[in-house]
Image (tube, rainbow, N blue to C red; front, side, top):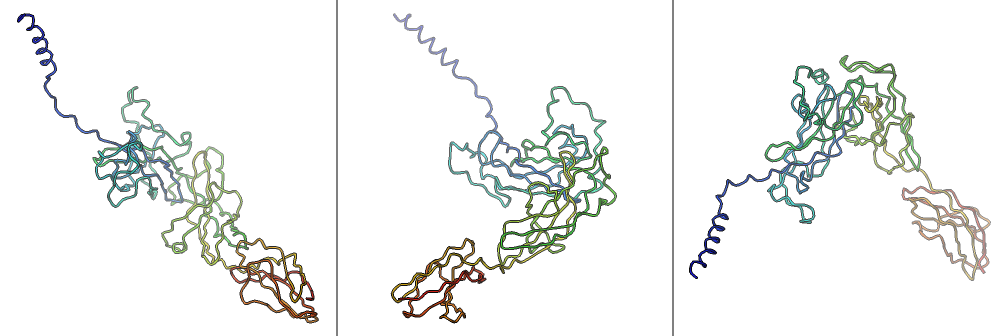
Amino acid sequence: MRRAAAVPAVLVAAALAGACGKKGPPLPPLVKLPVAPAEFVAERRGDTVALRFKVPAANTDGTRPANVDRVDVYAFTGPSAVTDAQILKHGVRIGSVPVKRPVDPNDAETPEESDEPAPVEGTGLDQGAVGHAEEALTAESLTPIDLSNEKKRKRKNAGAFGPLLGPPPSVPSRTYVSLGVNTHGKKGPLSTRVAVPLVAPPAAPSAPTIAYDEKAITLTWSPPPGAAAFDDVLPSHPIGGSAPALGYYVYELPPSTAAPGGAASPTRLTTSPVAATSYVDAHITWGIERCYAVRAVETIGPLSVESAAAPSACQTFVDTFPPAAPTGLTAVASQGAISLIWQANAESDLAGYVVVRAVAPSTDLTPMMTAPIEDTTFRDTVRPGVRYVYAVRAVDKAGNLSPLSNRVEETAR
């Protein structure tokens, strides 16, 4: 019996011995990387390229907040068929935008795990905000990088080309990418590549002329006199024997920066180039100064280039436009009173109505109230047997009075 009981004991001991392995070194914590900046856009205006992107708010594994310390923007002039690694190696970092980073990157969670985002700190942009960078083109930035002496990539790296915005350009161009850098200095994936053409920009059009009525603002301008040289550095065009398509972008400028030398932050009002030399802005606010500028834009295949800054024009819009005359005025006599009724006006800035009256046979109408009434009815207590003449005027919030409505006469019983 004792020998039989010993067998299970040996097996248990062997099992325990197999389960007790030597512990290895602890694994390093997983380093999270931010996703690529989204909505990356490059717009060339004269000799300046303005870039815009959305700051990463998540990591590549889907957790939030993003482990991001800054967003870097790189520029590269050379062949379009280059790898991401070549852009980072031979390109130039033209901007670095700080971002509020997580207090503890390891606290990042998926949206399903927590409705409350982990705290972030720093003095940079908020995660998910829109960031900006800018590059002034120089003779050096226009010189293509020669990659002919580099060793050819191995076949396994043949797919390392970043996505282009549309087909590779057929004109000299400069390519831009952006990427997030985490708190350990590790680079995240690159954004979509965008490019601007390196051809001479068009000349600027004239300053716009501003006209307006009670409904809209109309801008008109003269086209540019011809092509403008860009410091004799950029190649001339047309490219390949076909002229680029010319159009215009309309911008609104903050009034404080519209003067020459101001650091304007323009808002583009036209989503695509307009062919006409006029534009109607239906958004009008009385008593507010608005400033406009127009830039010529040439579209060359998938790329475009805008003219240098054009003169701006500013206008403070004053409401001097009276409402329409009320219509349909009728009078109904009763015992010791005359009741008036009329059709309502449709103006959005209508303040109300003023009733005017005269005692016949006089036609000298005088107002019956010092402030406009909002109703479209009015009851006037009068002397019986006396004939009265009435009309109504509409008045807007700026104090403009409409013409008189139709006149009516009536006598109370």
